[in-house]
Length: 131
Image (tube, rainbow, N blue to C red; front, side):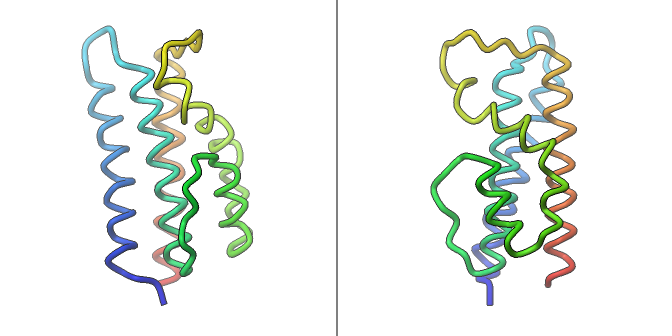
């Protein structure tokens, strides 16, 4: 049986990352698009790890959303519906944290927030159905 306290900690951290992204998106220009997309990726990563915790799996210390999705899919094959969103969000795990040539515009940022919300809604629904 899942450790409910640990599960809640993962859910709280995931929610916090998404709230940070949404709050930062309200800033006046220039909007910190790279930081917002990073938090969207982090939120999605933590929601996937929360699902693993729910199923008594110690989440691996990885950031690859697709690898995490495949782990979740072994438990619940419906996770593959998140592939389009996770494929986009996975690009924001590392590159936005360092100076590079990755340019993230306002539309990319809006899509990242929308996709992170889709991941959140899906995982919370699946967790709710399993509790």
